[in-house]
Each structure stands twice: as structure tokens, then as C-alpha cells.
Length: 343
Image 1 (tube, rainbow, N blue to C red):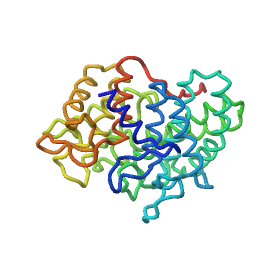
Image 2: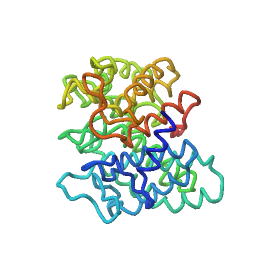
Image 3: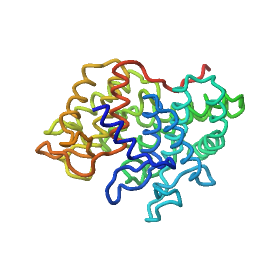
Image 4: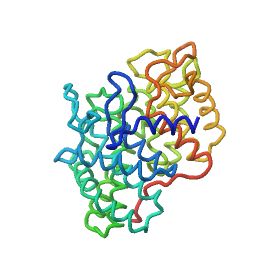
């Protein structure tokens, strides 16, 4: 499964660094979110140059305000103008991906630091956009998240923005920008407190109230995005139980508007990654075995698995490939996590 996922990513990453989400119709675009995950997976599997190409592509297409459009044409000529708004979570995903790439280079090397310096303007602009996005209550403004459907703030936006601020702050310290490091650490602390107070009392559901239901994004509250907590771990276990369906896979959320009998592989893999990263290897193995058993005849990981257990929708899917690779790595050794600075 790991070999095939890497081969598929090799095909999905274009020479210019654009990542095709999949090779079929409306998936043949580059999403900053998917691209960030692929960059991390390639960096952590020793493909640092490929990872860097992706990050450099993201730097080229970043908007002047530090954010990203929802998706881009693979030739890098511009965003896809289909009316969907920018997705704020990218200002979290991308700095986390840069931090992860640098961590995978074992830091300190002159080429890695030179490339990091070249990526720094992108990271700074994204982190500044993340700070500007925070409302008086400390949470980000409402934005479409990975569901690409929300009219309110969701955990799927707040959690990656927090990870991005932590990552950017650590990179600022590495590059000697203490003022930025302190400013982003302050914003991250404020956001972390807001997530705990707004989402925590309801079990870290999709939105900050009980009836919004479980969301696979609860796994974003743990490694390799950030250090988990006992409350987050309890929420992850509760969410997995709530999202599991008859074919053994998971839905993105209890309020998911799509087919309730079709599992989504990326969201299923989120739980494998969380469990592997927090030392619950048997639970991770159970989910990874399910993913392995539901690949296509050619061995590719599909986007979805239907009620009868058949792979459906597009295959391969870059995001699923990336998450599965990271989960397999985490079964063997801990993945790096952006640190929380000492108070």
C-alpha cells in the first residue's frame, strides 16, 4: 500500500509542483490543503526535493493578502473561477507543511535554511492572515473548510489555523524573527483557549454547539498537527464510533449531507494517523487494514467506498495517499509536531 501510494503521488505531483487531487474531471486541480498534506508525506518519506517543489508552487500562487483560493489550475496560471470563496484553512495547512518539510531535513543544513528563507515571505503572509482572521472571541472568522460547505466557524478551520500559527512561530524563532514568533505565539494561545472553551464543552464537534455533531476534523487536534490532550483523545474515540458505518469505514461527520452508506477514505485515514501518532497502534492497524482491503484492483486508494465495499469515485486520491503514508510512518516512529513555546 505504501509503495503504490508513493507511485501514485509521483504521478499526481506535476513538474511545477502543482498536486492534482486526482486524475479525473473536477479533481484535476490543485487544492492548497491537499497539496500541503502531500508535501508533508513526501518530506517525511525522504522525498524532500519533491516536497519543496510543492511548497514553491504554493508560494507562487498565494494571494497578496496571504490567503489562497480554494483550488488552482495545474499549470499554475491562476485560480479556478467557479464562484467558491477562498478557504481559510490553507493559512494553517501551508505553514505546517513548511515546518514539517524543514523538520524532515533535520534542520541546520545550509541548503535547507536557504530554501526556508526563500519560503519565509509566504509563511509570514499566511500567519499574518491567520492573525487577522481571529474574531473578538478568539476563533477564526467563518469560512469554507475541507467539507467545502460552511456558513459558520468549524473545527475543520480552527484546528489547522492553530497548527499553522504554532508552526510559523517556531519557524520565526529559527530564522531569528523574535517579534513575529512572540506575536504568533500570543495569537495561537488565544486561539487554543477559544477552541477549548467553544468546542470543548460539546466534545469538539464540527461547530461550537452540541447538535452540530461529530466531525473527523477532531483528529486535527492531535499529532502531527499538534500535541493532543486527554479531552481531545476522548473526543476522537467518541467521534470514530459515531462516524463508523456498515462497511467499516467512516463518514466525514454525522451531519454529512452526502450518502450515509458511503465511507470516505481520507477521513477514515485521519483516525489511523491520530491513533498511530498517539501510541494506539492496534487501533491504527485496524483502520489501515480496512483501507488496504478496499483499494482498487490496481492497488490505488480511492476517494470513497460504497455500502457493498466497492471502491468508488476517483482513484487514486492524493489526500488519502498522503494521510495513509503518514499513518504508516507513525506506526513505526513519532512524527514531528510543531512545539508549543514555553510561557
